[in-house]
Image 1 (tube, helix red, strand yellow):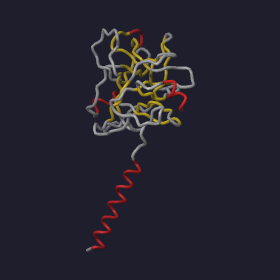
Image 2 (cartoon, one colour):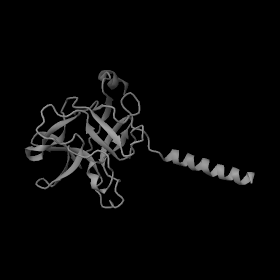
Image 3 (tube, helix red, strand yellow):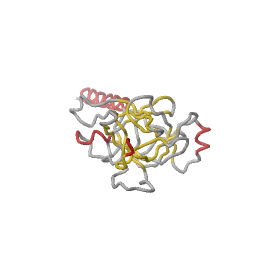
Image 4 (cartoon, helix red, strand yellow):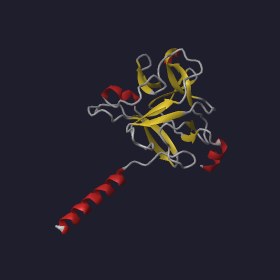
Length: 213
């Protein structure tokens, strides 16, 4: 009996170790700290031309919903992350999550949410990242609202749209989030060169964060 109990304990222990080993790595900010859900972060393109993210008009100058665009050579607006598992205490790579602007735009004629979503523009035949998405409620009806963060190098990351929140999403799109030039506006869209960023915690000395990477 003791041998059986020891054997079962050994199996449980090894199962736990296997589960822990397969858990995706946490996403780190420029100070090497784990990114936390609900905490505000700026996106930076450190040591390369670029900038953070902000609100913009939609493709074709559509007013609503507002689009997500790159704030060229500017810090932009902070964002927060919400993992698909609401109990998760850190943001992890290769894991479905919602992204949203921490604050609404200063001037807002739209009444939609700050949550990012992917929308296909028929006129331009292109998927763009817009606002007015849905936070949480993972499932086949909300696949457009789920993104993933993937590591590019040490503390450098990119966004990927490859939702796995729907069991029947075998034909789902799976592309990097890149930059699409549209009449001088740098829009976040699917495809092209990935929009590689670092994450800077709000209220942290940005210059100090840059020199520490």
